[in-house]
Amino acid sequence: MEILQIAIIFIVFALLCIPIGKYLYKVSEHEKTFIDPVVDKIDNFIYKLSGIKKGAMTWKKYVLALLSTNAIAAFIGYLILRLQSINVLNPNHIKGMEQGLTFNTIISFLTNTNLQDYSGESGLSYLSQMIVITFMMFLAASTGLAVAWAFMRALAGRKNEIGNFYVDIVRITTRILIPASIVLSIFFVAQGVPQTLAPTKTLTTIEGKLQDIPLGPVASLEAIKLLGTNGGGFFGANSSHPFENPTPLTNAVEIISLMILAGSTVICFGHMLKKKKQAIAIFAAMSILFFIFLPICYNSEKAGNPVISRIGLSQAMGSMEGKEIRFGLGGSTLFTVATTSTSCGAVNNMHDSLTPIGGATALMNMMLNVIFGGKGVGFMNMIMYAILTVFICGLMVGRTPEFLTKKIEGKEIKLVAFAIIIHPFLILMFSALALVTKSGLAGISNPGFHGLTQIIYQYTSCAANNGSGFEGLGDNTMFWNVTGGIVMFLGRYLSMIILIAVAASLASKKSIPETSGTFKTDNTVFTITLVFIVLIIGALTFLPAVALGPIAEHLTL
Amino acid sequence: MLDIVFIVLLVVGFIGLKFFTDWCEGQINRKQ
Image (tube, rainbow over all chains, first blue to last red; front, side, top):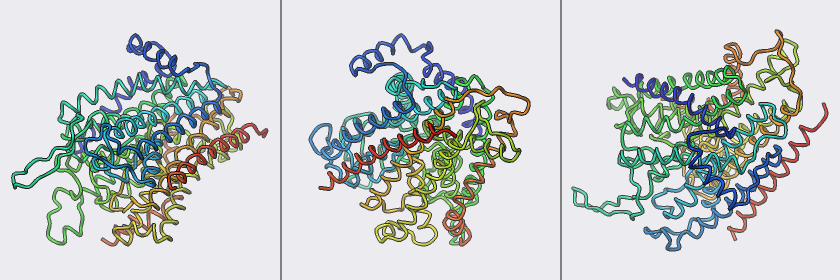
């Protein structure tokens, strides 16, 4: 039954990607859509109000527009979180956020990471939740998707016409994120998710004790949290909280919602290139990787925890520690694999309580960071690996490597290699720093192999802009807030800039006509080779760290 | 005081990214 549930959710996701991918393409290319009569007026009003000129930008102008927009949002958000104690939409009288935590939180939400070193119900006013957290969820998601569009346009060969960043984020927000969020919010409210500005309620339990029930505008945040692959919950318990994810149906919808735009981006790519087979090859490679890790996670959790079994507690249901009964093992493991594949970071179970191998799959999904990915990022990373694949295959057969009819030269490979190295560098170097400093080691709540996994997981989640927490780690300290903030910042922007530059470099080259000797990048051979390249590079880079953490822990159980 | 440190850190970060963008532009404009 659980496997059937997983299969149905994935099939629905894959089928929905087809029309939504086509819709994304139409929005990106300014083609007519059913929503135009309403939204055109809103868009034009926004352009007029903010003085946006619609002309196309060069790749560098596009990147600078992105950086300046994000920088302004960061400074305004920082001020609001520091001054949130003022009595505006703050019925629970939440105090201003501490400086280090504010730094971490702003970068976290700006970079689509949504790692939370605070608990929303006690750390944020409703004003902060709405105009900082929810706003940044829209901004970060639209920024990621806009960059993916710019990247695709460049790969499609449009020299100096990769779009206009401001127009792209307005169109993504008004035509994709807001309409979809409204529909999803209404569904969540119907399922019992609160949407209110009323303060926390204090009730008397049946035992006669008093209990605080936190409320707030949860449904609206929940929708963009998932659609934008943001992942930051209204409550500390995230999607395991019954007010964020009350039923098995909401759980299934949440999984599909967090994957849908990431998967649809690949289909959009096929339309943009006018090569659907290319999109299918990339989508298939992502799906193969997804189904390599999902059964490992599921079977590991299904086998149960031998330590708990030895003390006489039944593991017939599998390892249910840290999981919600209403989702079961299937709904929990699928959520775990989906959220770590897509760099969403929402969680519906405690990742710290996963079996070592189950936890390792979540960790490796984020280390690879190519399986569907967040808003555009995973897709761009997969293309980066595709470029590397054609380069390696070209070397093997002694031909000049080509990708999408463009010659790959040393300068592109140099930048791609740099982009590939940044991710493990940030994870492993900062993990090493945490392991040699008192402040870093102080965060470990479970020393030994598991403690090492806690540290590696934290920086992997930051570098991949995932944001899921292994929890257990005491991360609300100056050391973890500052280092985590730096890793999220560099993990987000460096690879984005590099990949747009690489795509722009390819766009500026002449197309080489395809011949019978051209290495095809849209067939099964390429898909399988791509999967192997991703796995080999991932294993070469991360296997020692994974062996010392979760694998060693598994062997000692 | 700490506020100033973090604001400066953010400013330096974004300015650094601007220079990084310039460096990438230099790389892709290089003749092979």
